[in-house]
Image (cartoon, rainbow, N blue to C red; front, side, top):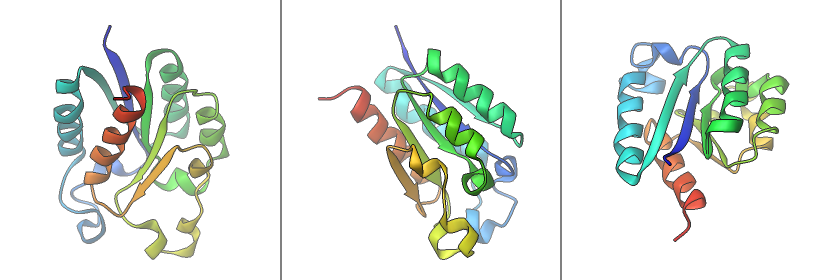
Length: 147
């Protein structure tokens, strides 16, 4: 049976590649998904990759992942700093969770320095561009399939 990893992306990430490229770069969500698939599929993992601007949709996918996923990578975007509801949903997920941010949120506005999601995350990667997704997936695979 193939183990599945969920990768969830929050609001405005559908504009990746065109929105503030000086902060987020020129890669698109399609590029991120392709890179993630190229990494995990040869290792025998399935990948479900989603993006939504709606908080409730992200929560629904977290709930779905409880029964289907061996791990979860989430870039909650602006919900990082505001959503206790996403934190509560993540607290119901018993497998590894990694939080990813394309930019270094700690070099940005002070309101971005707090993350509700970090209270649940097994690891946090920020400021590595879209490579952060691959770093998170590599660590998640190590945790799920120890050597």
